[in-house]
Image (tube, rainbow, N blue to C red; front, top):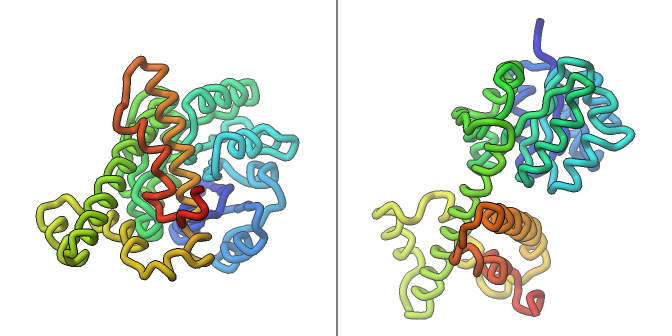
Length: 287
């Protein structure tokens, strides 16, 4: 029997991931709070739904990629949420970067309904999502993971088994600490190079040659190479506000996990106060 998939959350990462499901030929039902986002997937062959509940009713495996913990909980547990429509034996896959305790709570809530919950955060960025080349961190019940595997392999070229339920969510927070510290390093190196009258392009070329500046970091640093007037324009500022908010949320979760584990992350602890600068939000918006 052909696997029926569902996708809730068609944003920066979710939309290309859902497109990969459709391109793979999997029957895919989608929902998002944005009607145009649903319509765009429908044009590619996905089936539109009016609620997460309707997605679950039409799917064997449902992928969730929404903004934060509250949104994930709402998608799963609300009256029109996934748990209300999911059949026994179905799997809910959480791709959002959330606290591991939420994954564990949702798994407990799904168990009496016969619905398995697994954590499978992704990393690699939007471009690799479009190419089906994401790294997918997976954790949870082996049987549920195998049922979800055809969906995960549609957008993930590498699946990393991290351990029991919640381990993938914890691992993603560790990876994100590394990512945001890299962004800080790249930003401050570029800032110093410009202040010293050096070419930002040559700075990037040298950083690329020695492996310190990756293609992903180079794309990240693009905003800091724009003319100041353009960088501070409303259009650019609107683009960077979302990722900056996600970074603040992710770092808050990582620091909470560190406190739970009894470790001090001195570098990560300075990051929340610098995220808006690192992401290029205008100074007047940071005051």
